Length: 169
Image 1 (cartoon, one colour):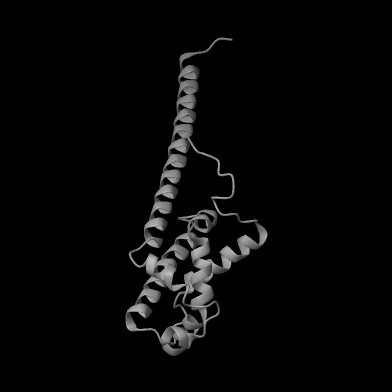
Image 2: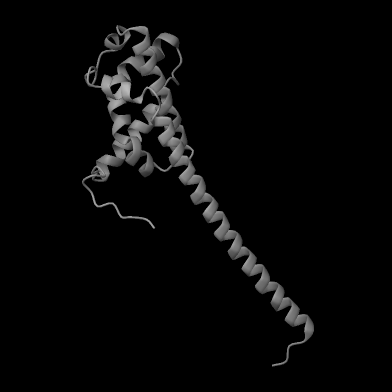
């Protein structure tokens, strides 16, 4: 088989193009991985705010399915902490919705906190929605809670200290 110069150049061009496409695909995949990792860091930073410890402690004072009035009766600083923490979870919910963070990552990092928060604050959030006529108040927090609950209903969840977590190199 004899290759003339034009055929050889076409073959080289085709191979170069295929190589460039493979390289680009690998770069895009790596960029997506880096973006996902950065989003997970952002979730951590969002969840671990200065009022996180206060909120986790406060969960012990607020029973599940607490009536809205219980939260309304707290002092202004405590109500603001509950409000701000809900807004932080709101951001995480939206990040999951937009696929910046996958549901499994959010569930692993803050799933229990999200479920605990919403189980205590949902009547208060509903009352605020009705009072202010803003149905979107904590909408992404509620959305995330439903997704995490549905995920846990179909996937056995074990805390990291119990399950075998594979190490990544």
